[in-house]
Each structure stands twice: as C-alpha cells, then as structure tokens.
View 1: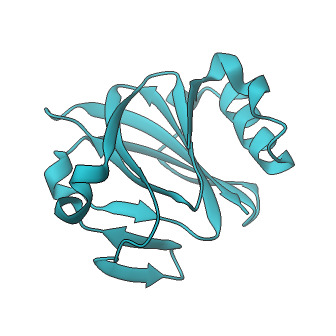
View 2 (view 1 turned 30 degrees about the vertical axis):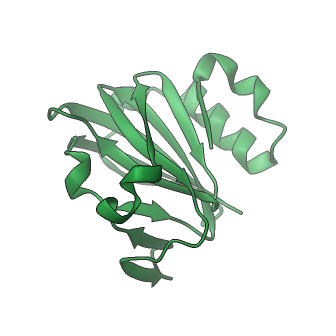
Length: 153
C-alpha cells in the first residue's frame, strides 16, 4: 500500500508503466467536470471509475482484495478513511468473484488487526493484491467524489 498526494507522483512512476500512466492521468484530468461512470484509458489494462457517494460506518462495510488489478484510489473532493491490513491467511466471507476481481472479508473478524487511515481531497492510495482494504468509510456520513483507476497487473 502507498498513500500520498499528487504532488509526489514522480516518486512512484518507476513502479510500472501502467501505474505511471494512471498517476499521470490523475494529475492531468479535472475529475470535477466528468460524469459519474466508467472510462477506458487503455482498454482492460487500465480503466477509470468516477463515483460520487456517501461514506458509511466501517462496521457495515467489508474488507476486499483483488488478484488481477491494482487499485489507484484518488479522492477528488470530500474525505474518507480506509481500513488496511496485510492479506495473509484470512478467510473470505464471500469467495473470490472472478468477473469483478474481488473477494470480501468480514469487518468483525479483521478489525483488531486493521489500521484506519484518512484519505483527503488530493490524496491517493495504491492497493496491491497483498493489501486488504476497506474504502469509503467515516464516523459520520460525508459526500465524496472518488476516482478509482484499475491497473492490470
């Protein structure tokens, strides 16, 4: 997992050409002007999801992991927190869903090991397959516009 602001994207562009392309797209695009929806950046290799939502209490959200894609999550406006813990031998509450590339894990079973980290407007997080994460939470509901760029491994 990596958490940082767009001011520092040059520190991470060496990770892979696709991550570099995703981060540059975040830096070059005014997401406040885009409609909510999905956008292809490089076919199935890199695609963008723009979403508006209300944050939820962590107690009602699952943790998740992905196998085929790295999540680049960027908060355009608002603020949320995300839960994080290393993926090890945890048992999923819902098995891996191949079509949508995720497995879910129960909050109660994993809360003792999790850290919760704020993600404010202008910040991004990179979640790799070994990063169990729970996005979109806060103690009180807040409006958030977030961009998730899915980067194929």
